[in-house]
Figure 1 (spheres, rainbow, N blue to C red):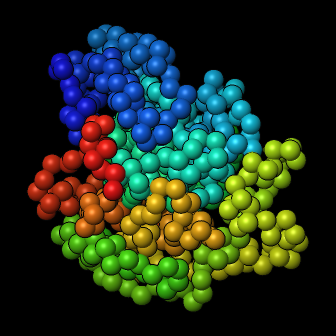
Figure 2 (figure 1 turned 90 degrees about the horizontal axis):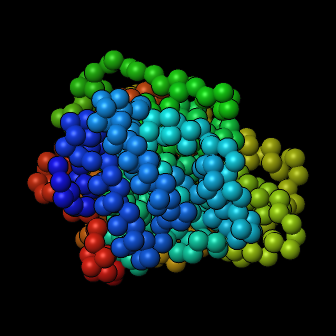
Length: 473
């Protein structure tokens, strides 16, 4: 294939691109040229990427093209253009964690497990993706990187904390991005930007430092790509003591039981546009599985509140970890939120840890009568690009539906469920039992395909500078 356009590339699923590479119908160098041209065209508007590896990416694409011509591609992703989040370490690329408190940042000397696996499979890392300070807001507002903007409307938020990943993929840059998710940080931007994202069973995609709540996860334009990316990135890694194998489940989806939750009984009220998209997805799901039933959530308290305390403590510790003269760079809004953690003693910490454990127990009950869950991704459609969250005093308060599954370890996928009246994407979340990630990816792909079939229209990504400008509200 010659003369491939960005519009065509944006509609290709990963398997289709790789098949074109193998048949020599698509040239990895041409794909890289198109991708880098799009970076030049739109990154100044959306502020999604930094540390662009222009010369190295073209060279690596050329080597991939030669391997395909020789019939010896490397791994599962040879020649595929990808990006990684600021917080994902890579040799020679700079880590800032989104914040000016880290000065000029830290140049990577070791690849994090996701970076290592991307390279081992031949993927071409083109750039790092911007993120908010400390990863502690579901937005694209960063004291170091500036404001990331949503290609669907430049006045709107891309979500976070994998903000640059969401914005760049929606703008047609790269085939996937590796983000990280501690409260919804791949699923929230996927919802804001009309993408698909997987937060795996805890440990199934290894990451460092090892964590029992934070997961690395792939973000893509198409849910059909998620299973391949899970297999490429997943599995046991020596540097992540919580890492586990990728597991398969042969059970049929056609008899699966799905429980639908329109709310969890706490948190912000769910906007009507979000519920309308959820109801539409519920109807679309019915022919794909055995049963789809609405349920009432079992929570008997605000299960997000103790989770928010864990984030406050995390924020205070990062703020306090730098030299005193740098601490003034911490955004005041965030400091106002988490400063109380400075004075917490062991008994105060034990109190919120008990609350988290209580929430996990009640989250586990969601799966008592179901193999999968269908929920909103968040209670709102979107909010202004300049804001760190819909609630200025609690920047992650809109994580009601996502943060619960970081604590419990369940795999969760966000896909685009539809649009609101303004043309902004609205996501829906599918959740599976632990270690059922492969079936979850397949169900997400099937639901996304059915929703597209019902809509009866080709995907219309906001790709060009002109379209991006028109998308601003």
